[in-house]
Image (cartoon, rainbow, N blue to C red; front, top):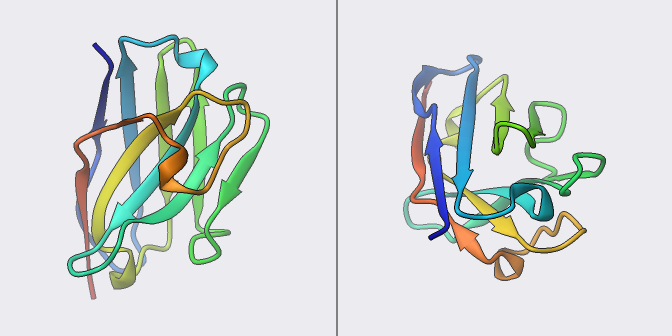
Length: 124
């Protein structure tokens, strides 16, 4: 059974940082590209960042470029999202997702498995 478990969310002041983690089990992690998405109240789920299965290729939403960094550890079966210079517009539930492909896709429909999400709240 595939499980993706996010952690690291919380409440932070504007300008602060958080590091999200997503631990994967039940799949061959190194065969999957991984993505982070987020959903704010009343809004659709949106792409944040993605990394290909060997970690050599990444994609970012324009809104987070230069502030967020996605990385992965194929030994620990974990993908990370380092978030710096957070602002209230980053407040959302953050989800990680796994995609059995070579490419780090930006569309949610490409992803096969999803975690339950972790809440990130940025206060002004």
